[in-house]
Image 1 (spheres, rainbow, N blue to C red):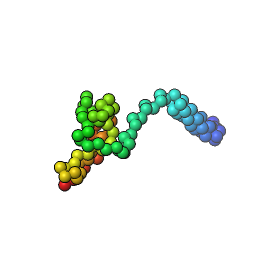
Image 2 (spheres, rainbow, N blue to C red; image 1 turned 90 degrees about the horizontal axis):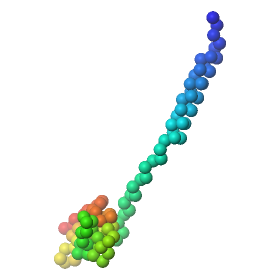
Image 3 (spheres, rainbow, N blue to C red; image 1 turned 90 degrees about the vertical axis):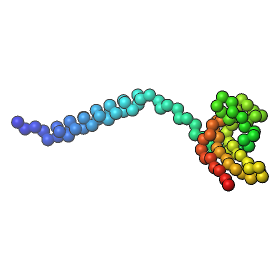
Image 4 (cartoon, rainbow, N blue to C red; image 1 turned 60 degrees about the vertical axis):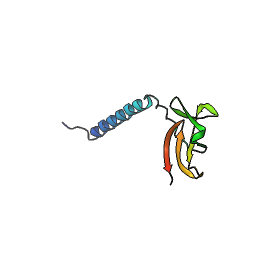
Length: 101
């Protein structure tokens, strides 16, 4: 019994096309990706520790107690030089904290 030589190539081509079709169906019908959380932006504002208060476990400015503070929280020595600074994002410590002596 003589089998045509091109038959294995045709079977391989059909299997490849079927696999590509299945992959396309799965890739096109997958659910959309979940939204990505916003990344914290570098702090641009600064406020002394005396200007900030804690409300509902978040730091806010005394002047605007409804909005969580984002920026640098600074603490001075008695002579006015910088003792520490910490990055705050949406009212919580986030990022760099530095102490100076």
